[in-house]
Length: 238
Ligand code: ATP
Image (cartoon, rainbow, N blue to C red; front, side):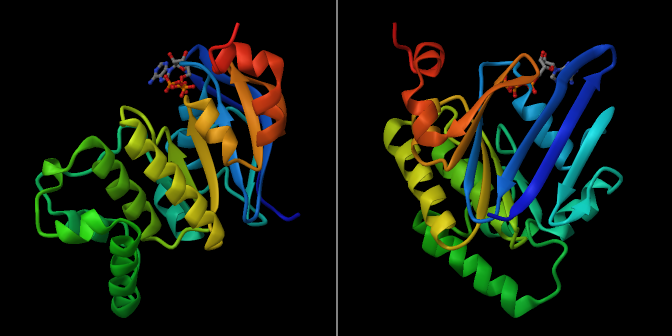
């Protein structure tokens, strides 16, 4: 197993508040790895730090064999790390196609970009059907597809998805989860943050449970799904 991302003793603070209190975890090449945990556990803070949007106060991040700590956010994308943020952040007045193309802003290979836009439309046909429409006309689930499609436009080695199922209908959520499985089959490594522990762990090779800034439990997705404390805390069982 090759580690694509290795995080060691990472600490991140907002002023005096330490949101991430020394976490270590690994994302293996070709796998789906999930961080689960309740609101405020520090999952989003972790992804934002990996993307270079927040600076860690301590710890090391090694991505694809090289340290990421001192690399600015815009360079991190070019190293192969893409982030589909919580809340999606699509541009509602721009068309679907324009939103996708923004994900390729660092690339100059026009034929490759066109190919990848088409690939996004194959992955999510609704985006292709509505390519010339304003992205703001899409439903929440469709906007999530667009956010994922846009993140894929940089041809990332690692795709980070922050709560892709948030606010979606069960059917739409299934579609998003099925797409993650498809992406993995096509060779993309995925780091997923989810509140929907059942859905996320079911498709994860490895899971980490976060509580108030710390990782408290690690295992395979299947192990964590069957873990009694996880079932009680995250799957609503007594
Ligand atoms: P959620 O699912 O609600 O996004 P999370 O696990 O992703 O939860 P974070 O958003 O990373 O958690 O938040 C971790 C902690 O950091 C929380 O206590 C939160 O209140 C705090 N925090 C997050 N953003 C800021 C900020 N900009 N300024 C100050 N504190 C923040």
